[in-house]
Image (cartoon, rainbow, N blue to C red; front, side, top):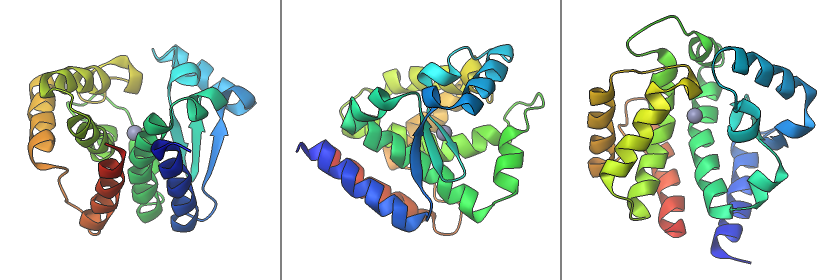
Length: 193
Ligand SMILES: [Zn+2]
């Protein structure tokens, strides 16, 4: 078993304990997810089912089984990102989903606030795996300012500043428990890279 495969098994077991009811499911096997995908297409995201991993409560939806099994290291990273969402959702069971879904025109939506907390994981992973900061800035600008999340944060200069800060000094711990949350995530990432 590869290191990444072993880490993935360990992480899934840990998430089951941390979030009772945690499970992984597959969009291509769910009619409800196909319907959501149709709605997302109308709002400008044509690849919700094929390309996006989505957390709903304690279920993490992958596009299909191959997307989960194909690259264990990438799946570990993804589950650590979704762990931040499940953590926030468990602590704000009403506010998280309501504010995440709310997408009135805004300079920076609440969705972007939640995603910044989770994409901090991706930025740290990128640094540990040796990626250059400029490439990470470009990737995050595409994610935050683009149609994938419905233009949740369009101030590209601010996005660049945020990425550089996380890349240099790690995630911002602004809520109770954040230090513990991110330390646990960091430990996985350091074993991965
Ligand atoms: Zn996310």
